[in-house]
Length: 321
Image 1 (spheres, rainbow, N blue to C red):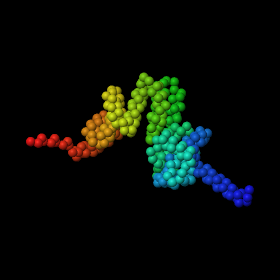
Image 2: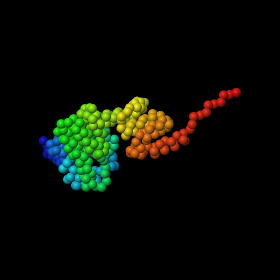
Image 3: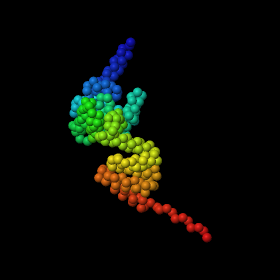
Image 4: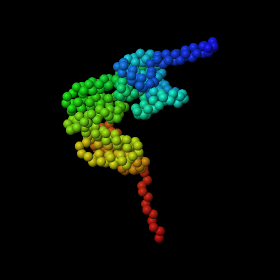
């Protein structure tokens, strides 16, 4: 081997080892399975950063203001394994990494960047967040608040595992899911579908009202899917069937009526104002004091204003004499 070859080889090895050291110093992994293994081994959660590193302004700000700061580098790894999932536009990812990131984007239903997903070591999500102003100290505090809900979730799961009575067990599992819902952004019905199925089975006689609660939520989710996929007729038909039932909670009925109004409006491309208004008035009457109930009057006001401006049907032409 020539002297020049030896030199070039040593230089290449130096740069490779340097880049490896720099990556380790930053503390971020890019391999999801490796992150889960490390989290399980160290008893930590996973902080997943869905980012567009070379084009997303808020992603760049979050990295500069928080992730690159010493406070974050020191404090975050005490509780989290850090995992970067990048979706760049200029640079190219290796095919395997790109495929992994696309799969996780779909699995976690990521809609925008940056999205920060917090999961346990198994990859079960318990909180979602994003850019937050205020620097690393405030962000660490913010993550702590999110993580507290997961701690309470696990306490309820542990209590449920020890419970002898099936209804009591169902109540504790429901309590665990309620803790996760306080963190916002996690679709409990899909992420925790296995737990929901347990609750329904444990409260099969509906003694705690949990079977009906989650069955109604399943119905809502299915109707929402039909709406989002453009199956407006099916969404309207399903909503009408649900509204005809007896015994459902008024808040659930209101959500279904509101969903029907959206389906009517979207199916007609905004022309069936009368049908949308009728469905919204039903929703308003069901539970006027809920968050949705308080929003409906403004929506109705806008739709009725549009209806007044809409041209009426043309008068039939007079027959020629």
